Image (cartoon, rainbow, N blue to C red; front, side, top):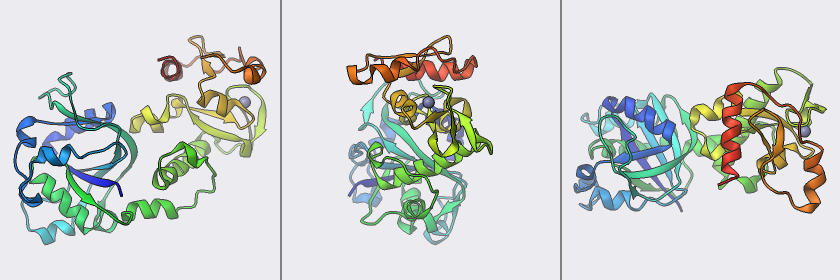
Length: 300
Ligand SMILES: [Zn+2]
């Protein structure tokens, strides 16, 4: 069972939190990690942070109850802002300047899963709330809990019905898949804006809405929360090849806004790629910025 790490973000770190969520990383000072963690039998905060493995959940709580108050009050409090990420790395060291006030050299790379407002023990469990309190009293270092069952917010996501099927092989777990399904439903509705038929952005063919999906231009896993929700980063792509070819990087959008090949297609797919080349997708600068990132991610 994967571990879950709770990370308290104090009010004074609001600006750093904005930067961290945009850059999809978080960091801690040596002085904070080298202290002993009294709530974990005296091992150091660094030992806890070093146990972060890729795909572990990191839950960040911001603007929550006062950690100096009594435990019982803390458990019944709520966090104004909660952000759920997955670790994309183990703890690693970097001195690249990311934050304005300090270096925070002990870092972990993150993938955004979802954000929430007003979450408390009902979604995070009483253990989760106390984990936030322990993190707050340990200089915002990560506090680990191991759950045998899903947390309530994961269960809630799984029970939502959004009526849209997705390929589960694309995501790591059922919870991320549920979040993705909800996001797909919302973005697709926004792009369709009530239309029952619409043209595919990549081939220009008009199709019934059922055969069009919302496709992120910049690779979804690389998007920060804002980019993931931005409509300039979303295409309506048909299920007759465009969505799959774009996702695989066999099609891209070149700097002039036209469909082009990013990398060589196998012979069996060359015709499917050829018929789409040259279609004008966009001239919008913001869309072209995302298209450049999609292109680069398939041309490392
Ligand atoms: Zn198409």
